[in-house]
Amino acid sequence: MVPDPASIEAVYADYGPFLYTSMGAAVSAVMVLLFATAGAVWFPAGGAIVAILGILLSITGLFAARRFRWAAIACLPLHVGLFVFSYVKTLA
Image 1 (cartoon, rainbow, N blue to C red):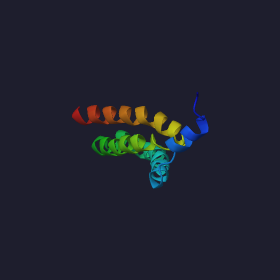
Image 2: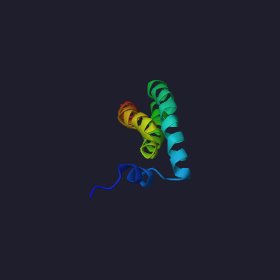
Image 3: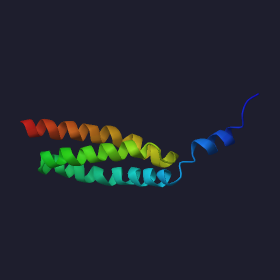
Image 4: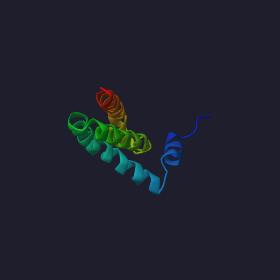
């Protein structure tokens, strides 16, 4: 006997307020991407700090609804790359 997929999805997606928090985090991760890029170019130490913020927002955004989750998944490697770029540029 196979369980009804709709009931599993309803239990899985019922996060309460954290669902909306993670949706906001996914949107914020996209917006912070611009600031992390600008910081990596002009002020690498600040760019590294903003990239860490973007990484944390992207990880929190992984718990959002499907379309927001895809945005968080796309932003996570970009933020990690910007962090590594900023960190290496700071050391040089």
